[in-house]
Image 1 (tube, rainbow, N blue to C red):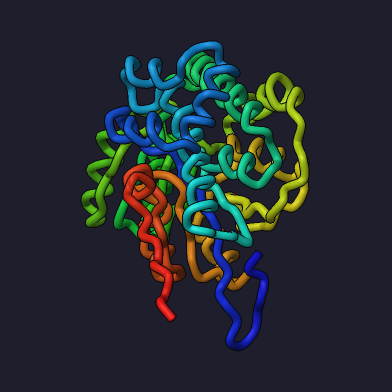
Image 2 (spheres, rainbow, N blue to C red):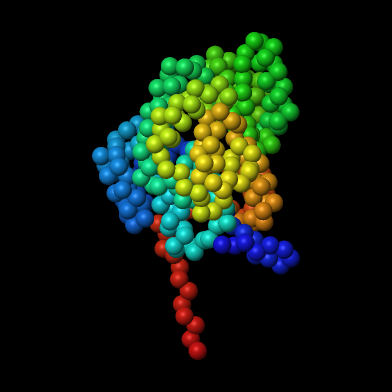
Length: 321
């Protein structure tokens, strides 16, 4: 493990499992079917689920289908195994903002892969049922190019209109995700543009809010209580505040807190940079957390994607003597 510090030391590396982004089956099909690490993990997932995951993924529409969610976890972990073997990476820390925390829990050794597959499947069903029943009118709006002080202006204006809001995710100084009632979206998007910002994608169901304590409690009792939580082999950086988590129970609580606490990615960046990390290997497709300015200014970012894993790895020829 790269643990040297001080003058002239080699910068440490960290591996990041990204939050889930919509990924069409066609974008990852070749990797899933050809890469040996992916094939091994998919075979295990099929045994756990009782059906061929790749077939269901291919046949089911929707950006965040149950099968797409499980496949995203599987692909991220397969890429990490590939990178560990073929790129010889040896990270000192692991992080996983939002959805990526599930893969981080497996890669760090806290959860067994099979448990993570069944957990992800059960979570998808539980969350769909919970939000349909408890919060059908809430959405999470992504807001780009609006600084944090202006986001607070938006929130005050919403409050003056008698509307509720909560900050679900801070991605960068000028990129925020705000959870609101769907009925205010038109007004909110107009106000975002009036500040010179860009309303990006809108997520439904929403995520990361103190309102979802009932979901946290239900997951803790019905899903997490039946799993084994081992202490991690390498420290996990919590996506809520950048703290280092070094126990299995701590990672369990971190995952549960993900339902009710704001994700603050700049805190993760600050913690990793302060610990001497100079390079991030991003295991999975990411168009957000590891591409914003706060990340790219702090680290050398190395994407590890299905496309890069399918390229031939150049090997150095022996030097003639």
